[in-house]
Image (cartoon, rainbow, N blue to C red; front, side, top):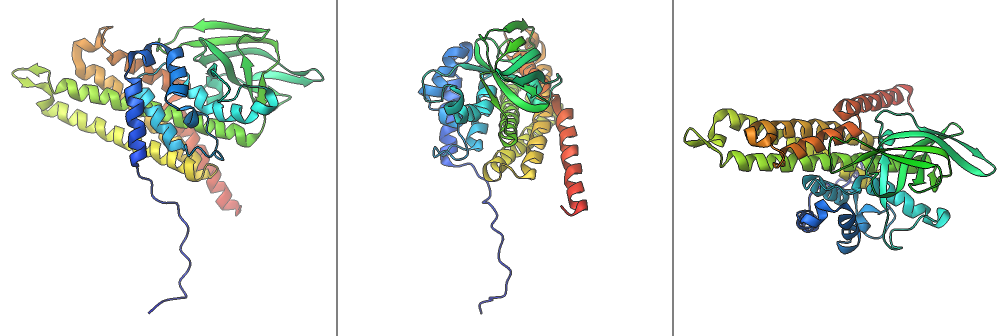
Length: 373
């Protein structure tokens, strides 16, 4: 008997699962990032990543594009880059790329397909880590910015710099030319030498372009936080894999140290953290794919950021401890993963900043429900 009085079934998005295309993408990216040229030469690696591998479509994709690239693809790219400690400007490129491509016709900013794409730098202030926005004014001769912005990631060799600004009291994202008149660039000491930090001082600088629309600003932030979380997941995953490999062949007292119960328990805790973080990161990537403006997407990104920051710092610290004395030598990569984890996490304020963000989002949602909005 057929029932015709049943309530209609809600049109929920399909459950996320990795596809064969995702596996193929991961394999191609891993082979690329494992080459010495990709990790030792940021300029070469960046150009090859965009042109040779075709990752341009993933990094600069907009939701209405017909390329088929999704935030899940972007998360895979960022995870593999983090695992290889890739030094190039992936964060800034992925965050700002779509907005730059969309504004190319109006601002003259080169589009993704118009030749070699310049290196892109991004201010930590845009992601919520300290520092006030760059003050500016809008007059008859255009917008002018003056002030100091620090820290800025991947500033070395960058052609464009993205930083938060206040134009007549309104928050915007300003894109500055590193070689523009009035821009002074200074190098800063970085915990991770592979990703240099810098400071810029502006004196009546006219920005190359300005992102004013609130929706575009939030889209930039969401992509940036997804890339940061996925990058930290890659750092944690590769550091854990190297640790498992080491304890499986390091012998003490006639046994591999991985056979000791205390080491097994420690590794079990670490793999649990990594897999939980993986679920959170790709859950946020999937949510950003199917419902980019849904409030739940912001919460999922905050959860992913908090877990990724905490997991990466915890796993890389444990990796140094479990490797023993060899891990504190300059030649061993353990300290490089530890440095990358702490610098990347600090760039967004760390796990505590994401937890505060999550609490604020939950409070806001409760207020909406309470007011009946």
